[in-house]
Length: 177
Ligand code: NI
Image (cartoon, rainbow, N blue to C red; front, side):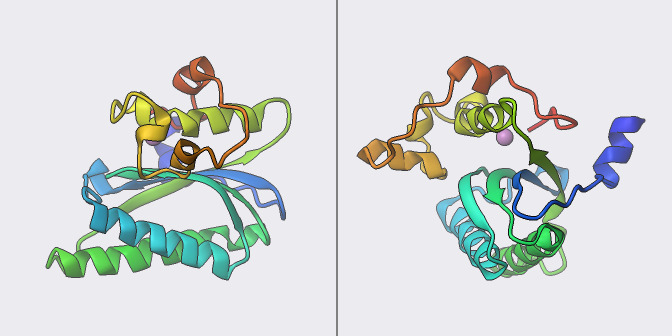
């Protein structure tokens, strides 16, 4: 069960100033972040801890049971700490809100160090179209809980990531999110 083993012990590749694609998932894929208040809790912690360790968040999307982030590393070795802090802080706050002390909120996270050769573009397209892939909205910019909804206001000038790539691309070792 190679896949299972990977789920439990993801091999992390730490390269300073590299760009990473990160995916985190709730325990048993439970929809614990199912409303605005709870997604807000996640976003606040996400911004706070990446900033604290001087990582730059390029793009993000958050759902009720998982998230995807593209971020540029400062010290790559800080990655597990950043994720730990985000997961720890959000779990505490969520469990208070739901009166569920000690409940396990998070399952794990996976990281991919993005290289050249279209790797970045493919992952970006995947993230961009993810809310459509998960059947939450029909157009990416309609999804509120994503860095891409700024396109609605015309603030973004970058090219729109390819839809076909976004909906068909598979993240290495992660085929369920
Ligand atoms: Ni997803």
